[in-house]
Length: 321
Image 1 (cartoon, one colour):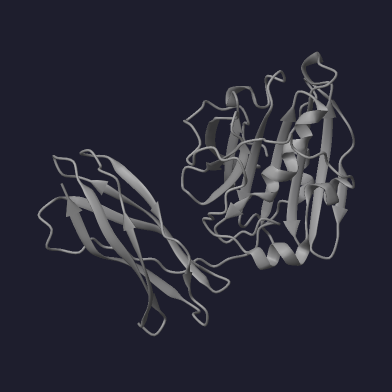
Image 2 (cartoon, one colour):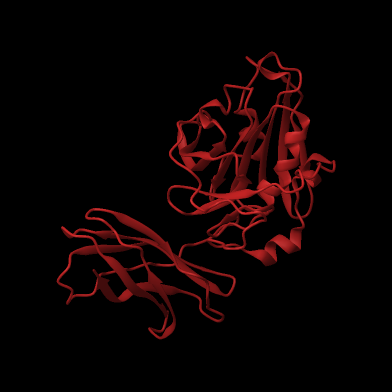
């Protein structure tokens, strides 16, 4: 990923640390994941070590709420950046680690950068891997390409980074067969034991329209949202994503308190199919929001079998406080 990896921390993970992988997804295609059986080890051609027993994990979410993954809970800093190749933005990169400013520059700390590009025509796994050059700090091995019936991939290993014989950087890019989408990861470790985290990190990846095994072409469903009239308190609600995927539907949006006093809100997101028939609803409730404060919400999955297009609309907003 040619976008700078080093970053300033923007905060702690959006979900509290857990002792085991979390199961809540923004959106994922488990069937596609099971079909390919793709693991990082299968790309590298080796079995990676397991993470230390008892590792606590925290889920990292990008600023737009479109994808997430789990990292060790001690990697508490994160930052979101545009992913650029050849001067053009193709996706988003999230960096996480105990000190994200050091990822790509300070090889005394571990960390990871994960990039998602739903549509990246002109870029290939090899070109993405070759765009990350650590030759000023590390010794690089040749780029290796791998493929099977479900994906193509490329990776490059860098060792001896920053003068530390144990420090390394591993750059991997993956594209599923027949797709122009890409997933890329830059993984930085201070010793080989850190490799034990990599399989879990990438296996926990969940993204809107992009299964954990790699991105797929996905035409977003149309979205609409409006705050119903009749409330004396001021607020705004927008739905940023209304996604329909593998028999399920969900939405991601933001509600903002534009009143002069604090309020909590309860509302429903209504899902309407292409024939104008309401087929599902999901209720949401916010904590108390101070004046000007915004709250990002994500509806749990709703059954959408047989639906080909959907519209998401906010209805029945109740204001408390």
